[in-house]
Length: 114
Image (cartoon, rainbow, N blue to C red; front, side, top):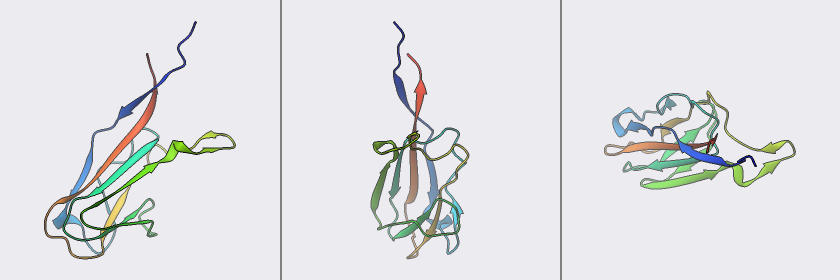
């Protein structure tokens, strides 16, 4: 009997310090090494920030301090589970002007393993 389990794995956390959150979009760490199934965005700065998944358009505003959880695979498309593609980068820009703290991105992916 084969094991069809998919194990949830975490990528290293990505972060950007408050002083680096500027008026234009800045990448929060490196691009995704794996397709993300779950993303947790934590704004632990003292001001609100805007998140973008393409570095151009505004997608999610997060009050400071605040969090946003994107459980991508809780919904399935016609062709199967949804995910944020490997190689994607998550960006942040300021709404206010943060002076303390950081913005963090935690990502999780599925791994065929036993």
